[in-house]
Length: 430
Image (cartoon, rainbow, N blue to C red):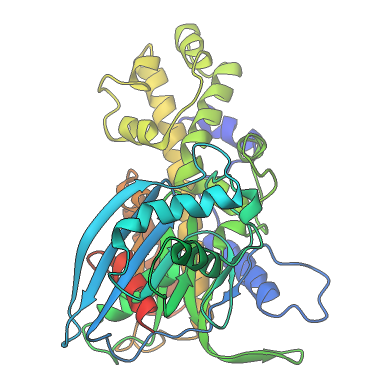
């Protein structure tokens, strides 16, 4: 990295190579605050949501489940059928836009748009698995109470509302047959359940983690039974809401991104590196660099005229810095092109560090993985994780260094086709 770039990042408190171990300890501290609140004045950033659920011992058989996947910018729905051998097949797939992204919706509008999106599945099954990838409190009957919205969804009237019960009421008012059960879960839980479902041998893995790094960022893991200060938790899947962790330092660029969002001061870690914000981070990096004289006059002039930047555009430049396009066209010469590339790459490098720390903290918290014959299974999902320049490679390399070489924790990163859909259907079958 150019000395000029390093100096620029340093004076703005931006460290591309984070201390993974220190960050893991900070995240673990925040997780503990969220799990055991009794008698503690300091509050956790992460919600540490109890799901009252564990992965089933066997795959569902002979069932049909309506699956809804609402999160990020897309709303997906389909029908999943499990045959008598537990094999799953997907039909009636449909994708549309997530309600509340384009404009603010009232509670009535929000749930009616959901109902509009799935009316084509009317009476095809009496169970619904609903992957609702926003902060919510899970009730013991499988419903979810919305705690807030991330990823720039605008539906404030839905906060505090039981999502499952409200949607079922709307569906039945439209003539749907009685829904016997609707199960709400987060996409991280769906990923975890899919990881369990694709295990080569049901007894092989000692525990499971689901991790999402897409438009947003979050993780879920299996919390062992524990007690602290007279407060206890039974063994179950816990959703961390990792993006809400606030026990990290922020750079000037993070603060600038935060101020321009719909919810300043919230989702601190998510705004540092998830897909909804990584492009905005790149925008702040290069526009500030232009103001502070890192570029030639011509490049600075072009960059200063830039109104916004998406992760897609940033990623395209990292992969092909000479290909004509929004960012490549900003660079007047080779030196400026290299500086832009290094600034973008620094944002990705830091994102990888935070992702590694989240996975590391979740693996440590399971208390498992100490026997190489029974590693922790980690299923990672999300377009940011999969498609961002060298991000996955960096996470996997750093995770091995931290978990296995430093902590003696063995893990395996697993994959499953249609993982979120499969995991949501499994949850809906319970």
